[in-house]
Image 1 (cartoon, rainbow, N blue to C red):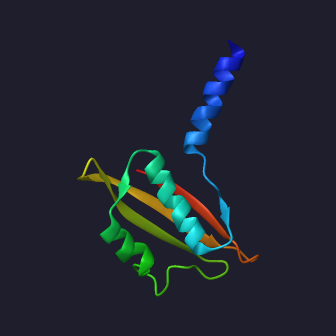
Image 2: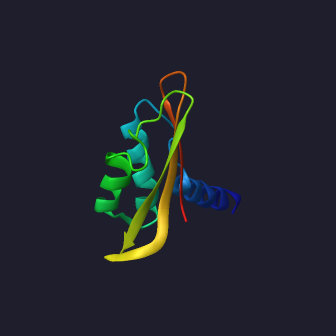
Length: 105
């Protein structure tokens, strides 16, 4: 019984778990996409292009060392726009890596 509960807990944890540290900004952004897709949402590609690929409110999407850039991307489910968004922040670390924080709300 204890093993079954532990197995179920690990399965739930895997569902919400994502990689925090990435070597490139692109890898971090792709991992953020996976967070939404794991929860059954699709990304609004036009909004993704505007907000992330073209940098949105930033001159460039990739953050400088010691800075973080935040993005909010519209989501779609069953072909219909949702009120929920994929929110993610990417922090430029001194090591040259990038730290990701992502969630859907």
